[in-house]
Image (cartoon, rainbow, N blue to C red):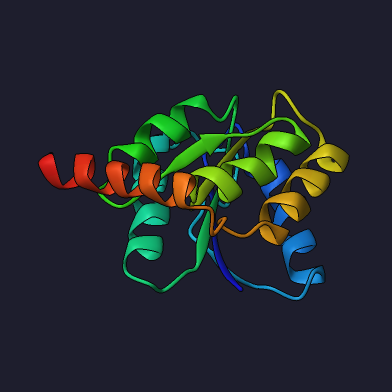
Length: 148
């Protein structure tokens, strides 16, 4: 799988462990920053992550910021993105299985590297369910996206 990974300054330190872990799992990484502790605006990074996903350059995205909340809000502003904050294993896989989430957001101030690795593994192993109920609901999300 090809993953795009981004962070703001609050998440850049954890992002290093995230990138290493994703590569160790055998996935390709597109890193869109940030690359140091200098302040950046999370909407700019979220836009880059979202663009890589919606263009097909990446299969899924990961965002790391302070809490994951700002990144999720920003990414969800982009058409075609279904982003979710995930700080527990169940949400990390269920968000894909039930909601076809394509960008997972985690908070570096909330989770450490060990939990982040487990969250990422759960997210990357998950597949969107073939259950008609879940498919119907996600189609409704697509329709809402089209409405603007």
